[in-house]
Length: 148
Image (cartoon, rainbow, N blue to C red):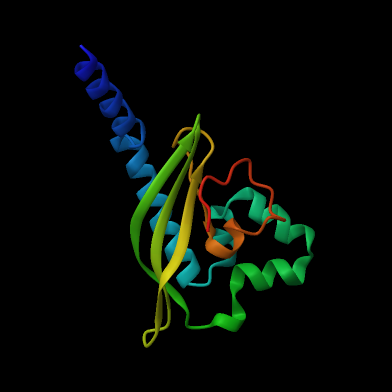
């Protein structure tokens, strides 16, 4: 009986850290839109797909900081490529996914760069943060389930 209950516990833990097909589909569509908006320098869509706490933070810093952050004029030619799922953690309805993503120009990529997807409503809506925003403590997130 003890072996059976241990097996059920392991099985429950394994399935509690996965997304349903519908949640996964919503995440993949939003992730694709986010990367496209970033790469095409579409400031409004890029900001709209970024986590609201990030948008509020840069809005409070003023128009120049907001535009600089969400249009990346100093990084012209820098794109995001090939997101690779690394890990997922959740706490109640709060779900975080960590991706490794290539960031750079056609000649040079940073393969260790991280992108975070966050849902606060059990996977119905997804918003994104680049690693520098995720770890910036001045940006108030309800949770930060990953550490450096």
